View 1 (cartoon, one colour):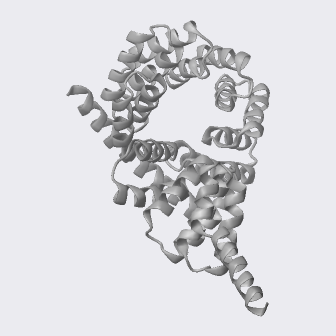
View 2 (cartoon, rainbow, N blue to C red):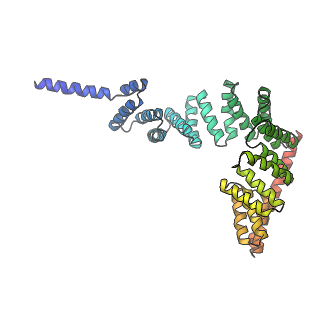
Length: 369
């Protein structure tokens, strides 16, 4: 009977090994039993923790169960063992993409492209990841490939048009918007974006006309603000304020409209009301240079120069290219007797004005072409 017991033990052991094999896990996956497959992969990892393929497979199971954070950790564990494995890099990139971590998705997706070449899936996720992180020019070839495969997809066409616009290829952006308007002449969003393209090209009358159509054709965020901004830029502060108020009537949390309305009121010497809107903008989203610049101007008018310095420096941290903030900071430093700091800020003002003149010359040359 001893040999019977020994044979039975070996047979049970063989069954256990078979039940905990990659083929068993894959069979469970094929049946959609991702939790069951996960358990098998975990068991196999305990036996062979140095096999990166097991970690990748575990990550796949977790991703299918929408446990992306855990899947990412397992993919990273696999890449610590085999950093250049293309499939693991692809899976990691997709997991980052699905969780909105677009910046982290780019590097592993590029590894996958280098190995697998350009595929529809990779063009889409890598193009959208680059676009979503502001790398517009880098995103263009991928988005163009996606749009070429689906030329009648309006969402893709809009993304590509915005990519051209934000990437500075205004001629291509304008052409895309023109084609989109042929399909849907009443699209307020397209008119708004076409206006932005014209404005970037220095064609203000056309930009104003497109923004006006956007405002008239539908409730699209930003249309009245865009009109107001053009008026603000041309120093028509009363008309600009009216547009900003219309924007806020529909979208009360539009922090830029709040800020520029406050600035318009300040320019019209309605200081108390201006401060209300400026502070509301800061409370909504504190990301604009003009809010703290205006508060600095108000503080300086009250001879509260230390407070003015803090506000101007905050404004400069947000946008260091604004000469007016540096100029007023210099004046506040002078009032505090800080001559060295004042001189340094005035040098910056001179440098920024020179840069702006060069940019203007380049822009005018482009308009003549």
